[in-house]
Length: 377
Image 1: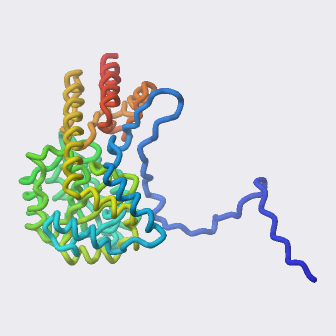
Image 2: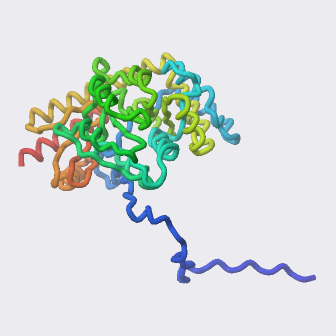
Image 3: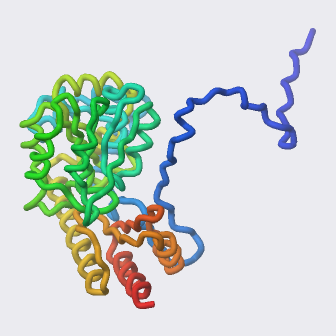
């Protein structure tokens, strides 16, 4: 009886890997910036705090963890691609039809869906800079042209300059409020004035990933603005206040035609079963109350840290997110290394500045100690 052929021996590590030089990549990738995530804290025996990513210092609520645990029993099945229960709950939240909610894997993924739905090769997307680092990546990777408008004094959006940057090729404008990484937020009146100068066919996305950390008394009335303008879309996330960054879920509130388009271009089954159930659990009344208490604690800590830094002599921009921004310019990397050597892992942005997430009290106190030592040198 003949024997089956023996399997080919695996290539040894010393053998060269197959060459891939013939692979033809998109030319766009040559100009594509890389997203730089917040660096984790090194495990070197030193007590360290990671404040380089805008994450919640709190774990998911117990009720949310219980919902995720229950959902695990069904993880062998695909999730509801329509996310019907979550869209219904969010529709009630925002006073819109469920069909006007588009769910995806975080608000950054919804931003990508917006670009896919609106931007053809060579079309323009206008946004402030510096702002969320993913914007130029998302735009460029889909063949769009990022139009990056420098921030104004105080590290705020320069809305008149952004309006002036709109051309016949502009398809989308993104407003990040509060702005990540600098912190200032946009007001209702100034956004309304800006929208009067934007053509009706240009979509304006208001990215409110940090909305819950804004002073509730002065937060942007984005709901009213959405109802007034057919070209406005709102972006939200469950990653921040709701502490679901690791589950990746966010959504858009859009007018019907754009909402349908977002559904056409999004990745099928992008919002996982566990993420959908966790998000639903955060919308329960008791959970909402607990989460707002947490957000109030973060706001209070942020204001304490900012006041402490100001008393040391730091000149800081407004802070309405769950972070503070140190406009250190050319010395940003130097400060990041200085902080790291003292147990605090922060986020440096090139030669612009350093963002520090508000975390547990001990981490915030460490920042104040390091900042005092730095400025007193």
